[in-house]
Image (tube, rainbow, N blue to C red; front, side, top):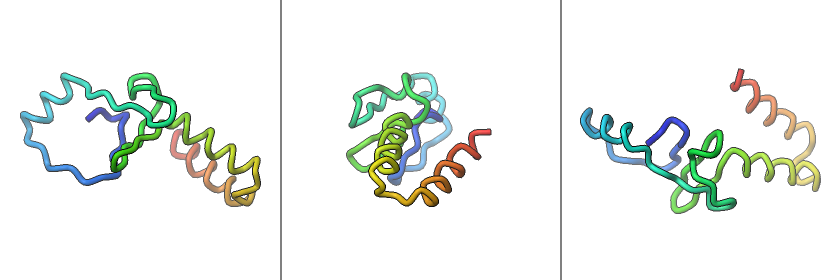
Length: 87
């Protein structure tokens, strides 16, 4: 699995040979919302039967902020935590 895909599910431990083979052939993971593969987005979160890319996550967060579904103070903390790690 590429470093662009974050898996929320548990996977079997891989041997050294399997890791090397997997690095050579990048596994495509598609966003369940927009359909883009992990090669076209910043990050992909892989869950049990569903995936979401970083772009769709940000769109959803912006929607919640604009619709007052997340109080602005909490949303700012989430955004600060998200962008703070990117530095």
